[in-house]
Image (cartoon, rainbow, N blue to C red; front, side, top):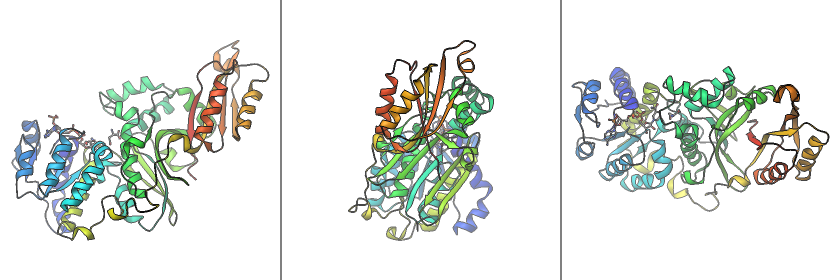
Length: 436
Ligand code: NDP
Ligand code: HSE
């Protein structure tokens, strides 16, 4: 259902590698029907190898179809079709992270009741098999945290901003011209797409329900070239990270720009590539890197799900790998269903840039307020006023890196600092993740 970018990649890879896939799956996987609004374009992709229809419900109604692949996207018709396919007893493969992050609980419940599989490897980090790694490869571990570059568009923009010293708006236009960013890039640049993916990762890592509405989401639109440059001077790169972490009182689930030490491998992931670090108590840190989008990289994940279903579809549902990694009867078990923490309870460290008048006592006043709040300073950078505001300038930027503190504590002290008469512009605050 839907033979656009990912659908056509899925068709082509399945055609090309059919023999190898058959040997792995133990049986052939045949695309019998294809539905797309644009039937002429669909026919140009599949030729006479599959029946093309304009109404996806014809696929769901066909008793010979075992698996339905939803590659339409969005929450509208895609949701209705996925639920109808499940109700008709079909297994479902989807790359639709938006749908699962928002309506996953309803969809997985319906699938469990019907005894069918909903597989979604392609929904997180495209071609990287991160769902499989978390759900199966790392199943021995208590997962402690996951941090990932899980949106290629924003990583491309941030890489270009750093490489060329350009501001966000300029690079966004270039990304759109090159076809990296969509005409409406809102979900990407505002962090929503990454938050959809982080939400799914969080559920699989910690055995909690899918809760997109509890995720903290902040995009990259307010980042300036100056912050990227200052971060570099302090030994950091700025990346849009999706982070989910086990904390004492619950689970952190957040997407925002983050300073990452330049020496970390993930800090060196450039362009539209994705990478995810998973930290488990037994294995330590593991890193997964690859293409997070694109026709055939995403098809690679869709077909991996099809092979899984070909292998497992006649197994007793109780003996299949649970879609969210934990057996459904243990979700919500006493003490296991940890709450997603509000952002004020998150503990992390910070980069703070404060535009101040270049006069005696300003730095002392600010560091005094931080000290009173119990916030320890890790590093301070102050550029010469001439360099910041031009020759003869009486303003400068103070950049302070802090050690860990609770976000609520940081908010309170930043409000105090913002109120000082010597602070001349809104303060920039970017979270910092050491990832060690
Ligand atoms: P496209 O827009 O390229 O393809 C979607 C296709 O679905 C289009 O051909 C569209 O037709 C068709 N369609 C729309 N409505 C219907 C309908 N009611 N019945 C049948 N077909 C319909 O999207 P992508 O392939 O890029 O994305 C598909 C999914 O994969 C999305 O959920 C996306 O988030 C996800 N994804 C995409 C990645 C990528 O790299 N592109 C990576 C990872 C996940 P028309 O064009 O005529 O409207
Ligand atoms: N818009 C997404 C990205 C596509 O830029 O990563 C893959 O999910």
